[in-house]
Length: 341
Image (tube, rainbow, N blue to C red):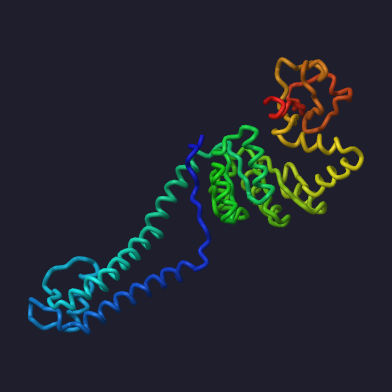
């Protein structure tokens, strides 16, 4: 189990490439150091060299470097009031800026990345039986909200997303987050997709979702995949890509609209069933040992709508449903959170 407060590293893509960022920092350093060298050279009469009494250009460069790095051997020192004023008012702020650039660069490219790598590896070892959510747009975020409402621990949900706002929202919910491309093998390996209990894919584009599905199925042949597609023509492709369940929000919306035309309460009831927070809710589970051999109508206080036997659906009215068998999966209507409140 992953600790509640642990998060995978939140990374945002830098619009400036790595080499460009480093080059810019080096350029700023040279400009700042060059400025101090120029100031010291123009005011070299205010400096004293305790070694030979002559302040050459090399002495100025040497004094600049030991001054900026706050080493200060004392062999060259400012003696005039103007030189000391320059050191206090101009050189000192530049010295602080140079130190910040050095420390900031070291932190960003060495310390922070080393720490993030350590945290990532520690979290990876703890990932087991988790839920991977690829894409955190409207559908992905609503799916996570529903999972949390159903009692799923947020620390067992890993969100893979590139959008900074989506990542921030997922982190606020308490999920583990990873700023990466879910279509890449490396990304899914980093979240241990082969050890996940299920994968939810809602990338916002059908082609991207299908590509993610293919990648997941390649790395995790047995992990259940729920995928959102918006074009009916892509539902078959999604299943061929390895999706266990394919959800088309457009089709579902059409069902609700059609139901509202024939009967306003039908659409309301369907929407109620889809969420655990309503008055009624759907649930599924493997038949208990004590219920084997019974008919669904014999289960007092329970309403079984469908039975899945060896992957095949059986209606409660069918002859095969009159006797529950080992391994049957029951789909039942249960009171929702509103009814239990």
